[in-house]
Length: 63
Image (tube, rainbow, N blue to C red; front, top):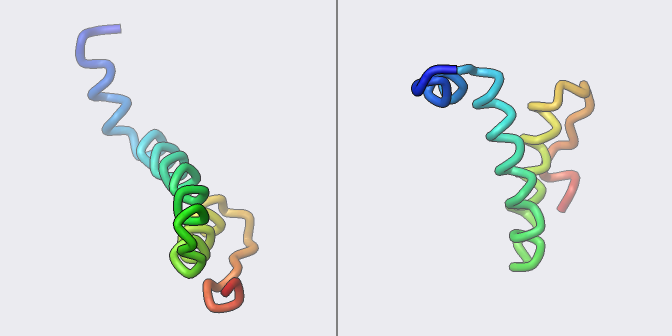
């Protein structure tokens, strides 16, 4: 791989999507620790939507 292979990976939409999901999943326990249940519910809804599982829990139903 060339010296710019990292740039190519960062530009790949699938890699960007996967990175976003990883970061969102890391944020969940932090928000829980802070007692931010509403924010955590919104983050979980985003993770559900990105997973393509077809099951998305609306944030208002989680709080």
